[in-house]
Structures are given as structure tokens and as C-alpha cells.
Image (cartoon, chains in turn orange, purple):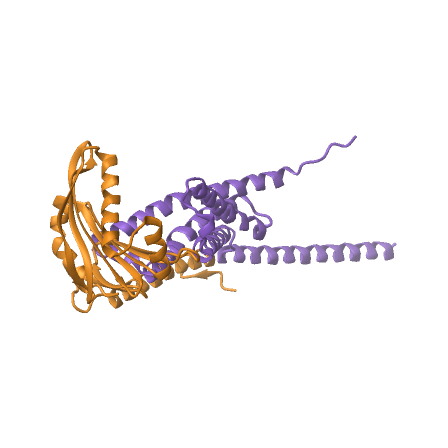
Length: 212
Length: 186
């Protein structure tokens, strides 16, 4: 039996080889992932394709996805996107038919527009916990085309709705919702007013790339 | 009445195994925090933080964690145990990695970072446990591995013993011959 490998004791040599191998394999997988998921249209965007949703989002943004599975109340799929160092967050949520019915029945909702108002109220209630005097303003309400569907939307501002280091900031948000074949799809983008203004262009790129 | 006899060397080797497990645990705690933070910082600096959403990226990170966190932490525990314990290495070196792993799982569970209802057996259990255990064996055997110089020395010792044995045999033969001649001569 050989006692040494590369002038090192055999177990030490195996240890170093294993470390190097795991780093090389990990890097190779990471590199191929970065290459294969880069958007065809924009180099600095990733392309996410799941069975519920197709979107493109900036490579530098924080992103995570999860699926909540429940046999009795249905399944929902969520994607969360957030720019680093800015107070803004973007949600994509897709409910299957069963989950849509459960969500609507539990909250007394009837259509896509009522879900928009419900989510706005939910954010406003959260803001009131930060500041009792927060004021909700509806800036615009209407319909727009997203992923070839007619979607309801509303743009809101909550004045002094966000507290950070004892300083109050205003929140701005856009809430979009539509129903596709009994499945409810929601897109929510909100954050500090100044931060949201900085990411407005990116939001429209993401929205235009969205396919359900 | 006979009092039960304690084998002190066995108790000491148990203590050394426990210390090895503690070393493995501390290394695991420090390395996992450092490496996770390091990978996140690298991804932010390279502008690819969004890649964390893909399963392949997470798999790549787990593979790197295996090599950079679990193997070295097991290796640390194994080095100490292998340095202090010289008997039953096969059994003694299996334990520091397991002790370190179990302590880490308990810590994560009590701080709420380990959800028992949602365990990924491969990523949460198998990879860390195997990494720690292999690391501990490699660390322990690194110190107890016979080097070529040692084996050459052993070879020399064996030849010396043989030579000495030959000399003694010759002496014994000469003595016998002398004795025989003294019996015959008168």
C-alpha cells in the first residue's frame, strides 16, 4: 500500500482532494446554472420558468419561491423579489382553483378587483400598527393587460405608513390581480416611496415579461 | 467486597472523544456561519444573488458546504481524537463527527432554525453527517498513518532483532560445544 500521495500522508491527501473536488463541482454547477438561466433578451436578467409562472427578473435582486400545498384548501405558489439595499418588495402569487375558492370564501371576496382591495386593506392595517395616523390614498384604479389578460389594478400611497429608526416614511404600492380559468393571480409591488421610484423601470420590465 | 474497577485509560479515551466532538461542533458552528455569509456576500458582489431561487444553485452551495464546512469540522475533531487516542481508532473516530453533528442539530432546533416537520434528509441529515464522519476519520488517520520513515525504521528494528537472535543462537551453540568438550577431555 502506498503510504504517501503528493508527498502528503494518504488521509491528508484524500482530505485536500475532497475539498478541492467539492469546490470545483459546486462552482461548475453554479456556473452552468448562471449561464442556462440568463435571459435571452437581457443579459442582466434571469429567466424563471415554473409550472405556474414565467418571469424575468434582475440577476442582482434577492429572489425566492415557495409552494404551499394543502389537500383541503388547495395549493398556492409564491415568488418574492426584492432589490438589495432598497425598501421595496414584489410578490407574485398564483392560487390553483381550489385555493382561489378557499381564499375568496374565507375573506368574503367575489372577483379579482375585490381581492385587490382586500390586499390593500391588509397592507394598510399593517401600516396602522407602525403609525395610528397613517393615511391611505387611492391614486389610480383601473384595468391593464398583463400576460394577455385583462387585470384589475390599483395604485396607492400610505402617507407616513412606514417607520424606521423613529422616522416615518410614506409607502407606495401597485396591486394587480386577475383570474385565469378559475385560478387567481396576484402581483403586489410596494415599498418606500423614494425606493420604489428608483425601481419603477425594472418593475415594468418584469411585468411585461410575466406569463402565466 | 470487591469494588468495581475502572479502566482509567478507557475513561480518558471517552473524554478525548467528547472533546473531539466539541471541537467538531465549534468548527461546524463557526465555519457554517462564515461560509454562508461569505457565499451571500460573493453573490451580492458579483450581482447574481437572484440565482438563489434556482434549485441547482442551492445544490451547488450544499456541495461546497460539504467540502468547506462539514469535512474540515469533522477533520478538526478527528485530529484531536486521533492525537490523544491510539486504540480502537475505527470506533473512536466515528464518534466526534456524530457528536458534533447532533450538537449542531440540537442548537439549530432550539433556536428555531430546524423544522422537524420539513426535513430534507439528504441536505439536512445525510450530507452533514457523512461529511463530519469522513472528515473525522481522515483527521484521525492523518496523525496515526505510518509514514515511510517509520516503516523503514520498523524494518531496521526487525533486522536488528533477527541479527541479535542469530548471535545469541551462535553463542548458545558455542557454549554447548565447550561444555561437550569439557565433558569428553578428562
